[in-house]
Structure formats: C-alpha cells, structure tokens
Image (tube, rainbow, N blue to C red; front, side):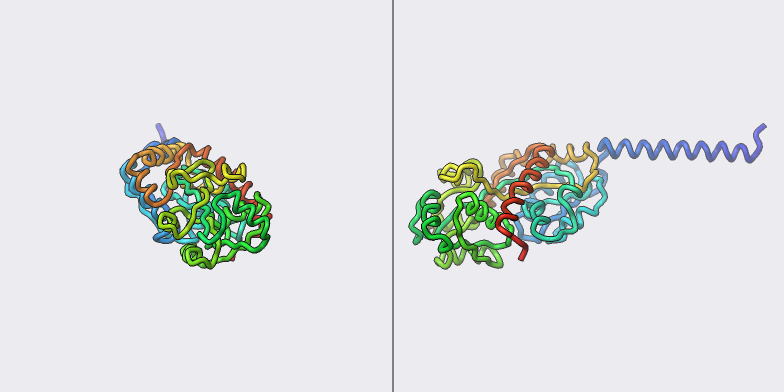
Amino acid sequence: MYSIKNLANVFFSCVTMVCAGSAAAQSTTASSGQGFPVKPLRIVTNAPGAASDFASRLIAQGLTESLGQQVIVDNRGNLAGALASKAPPDGYTLVLDGTSFWIGPLLRKTAYDPLRDFSAVALVTSSPNILVVHPSLPVRSVKDLIALATARPGELNYGTGTAGGSPHLAAALFSDMAGVSIVRIPYKGAGLAVNDLISGQVQLMFAIAASVTGHVKSGRLRALAVTGEQPSALFPGLPTVAASGLKGYESVALQGIFAPLKTPAAIIERLNQDIVKYLARADVKEKFFNAGTETVGGTPEQFASKVKSEITRLGKVIRDAGIRDE
C-alpha cells in the first residue's frame, strides 16, 4: 500500500515530467519553426516617407499574404536598429533598413552592432546612384570629369545630403579611386542639393536615380554614368563608372531585412523564401522600379556576406576621407 505521502510524490513527479516534456516539445517546435507564425509580426523601420518605409510596406503586404498573419510597419526613425536589437529572437520582430544601418556604427556611436546583434534575412533592393553634372560643366564622360578634376584640384564641388549617406560615399569613393580632389558641399537634405545643382550653384552630384531622372530627361542635368557594377534598367544606355574609366568602381544603396540574433534558422529560412518569392513577382518588381530601385533577393548567407564586405570596403573609404556624422 502506498502512503498518502508516497502518492503525492508520485503525482508531483509525473506532473514535473509532463511539464518538462511539454517545454522540450515547445523548444523543439520553436527551433524548427513549426507553427510559425501564430501572431502578428512587425517590421521596424525609419520615418514615414523614407525609402525604407516604402519598401517595408510592400514587404509587409507580401508577408501578410504568405504567412496568414498581419505584418505591421512600425516607424521608429533612427531608433529602429536599437529597438529591434532588443526584441525577442522569435521571428516576430524584423528590421528593414538600408546601407546606413550597417555603415552607421562606423560614423557614430550606436546602440546596436549590425553583425553582433542581428542575423541577415534577405537583401531586398539595390539602387545605383547617377553621376550627374550641371550642363555648364564642360564634361560629357567620366574620363572628361577625371581629367578636369585633375587639372583643377579643389575647384570642382559636389552636393550631398546626409554625411555618410549613399551619395556621399559614392563621391568619396570616386575621389579616392580617381585620385582627385573635389569639394563636398553639405546640405540638410538631398533634395536641396539637387535644387542647387539644377541652378548651377554646385557642379556635380552622385544622386539617387529617382531624384534626378526627370531633370536629366528635360536637359536640366547631364547624366554621365551609373555607379553600379552593371548597367541599370533605371537608366537604359547609360554606362557604368567602372566601364567609363574607373575600373572596379561600385557604389550602390542597398536595403535589406534583418532579425534579432539567435532567431531560429528555420524561421529565417521561411521568411527569406517568402520574401524572395514575393520580390520575384512582376507587379512587385514594377512597383519598386517605379520608385527608382530594383529588387534583388538571394539567400541569407549571400546577404550576410555582402554586408560584411561592404563594411570592410566602405569602412576604408570612411576612414581615408575622415567622414564623420554631422
């Protein structure tokens, strides 16, 4: 016969084993991604109206359809990276940002580290800059520009918005590789720089494609080349800087999605597959194209490798040019 005490011990032992088994099962389910998602997701990104906000809303729409759960865009401005880095690594919080996300820590103190605190999910878009000049500048090619800048060191100038932004880095890389001295004229926003370029107050700019397309077509600006490795459908017929006299040159603005570090690999793979499939749709490609950018895709490993190589490559440019946050 069992005493009441013995029966109680047996009961509690059984309960403990059941709970332990349940916890183990839940852990296995989470690590394998089974059952994901069971609640809404959020994509943390920059301020409303930014390029990353536009991309986030398109991606949120696609993931909502494929996952069967609502995906919410959470605009947090410059706090996006810091907030996302502290979120649970369960796949329910993602961050979508551009090149500044992984270059930012090279320019200023940040509350996150792009490599230490995040796992790459998918590369979403790639946007080359367009090297444009005011029509009064006597150049019609990259070779002409390099020759003129070489003959007149420190006399030519270019406009940019944010320090360390894609247009600024494109110009700094150009100056470094061409061995020329071109003076930077900083503006509070890229739009203001474009306006002064049109009026002739600055002479050239490495501009975001969408911001100058109409001005090039109207003749108010002259396009010399695109900054990507390959020619871009955004500017048909325009050569690359690399093919126009500066071999090896490449500078593009990228946007991608990250998840907090230690997010289960199975969940990252699921998100990646759904995002890449969505980006391959013709209607989605067209929407991004009309906004001045091109969809990419690829695996999480490819995206992670790209981020690491960009940090190394652009980090050297930032150090050599002495670029700091303003």
